[in-house]
Length: 142
Image (tube, rainbow, N blue to C red; front, side, top):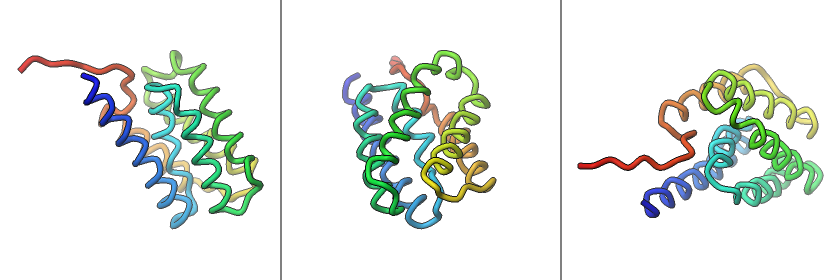
């Protein structure tokens, strides 16, 4: 049971770094939000990951060092507090991801467009269908 959970968390961490580098570096979109929101349901160490991603994000975009970390960690904190209300509804979770991306881009002075919002919502829906937002490990008998 522990190995499967560790593999899931490690895969999500790697996916969040890949989406940060691909999204912000290549497409200028914050595509890492759905993965971070799914990780905050699993482990409390996501705040440290958000801090690290924020530092990398600041270097990539040229924003004030630490401001992106503050925005990411603040968004994770708010999402974690509302997760009981949002957990069972993919539409509300997708909306929360889109709002987090919009607010963070506005605070950091970056551009935001509907394409980024739709991409984040679509990625949230895809991760929901792949069961990334499950916060417990399901065991099956074979």
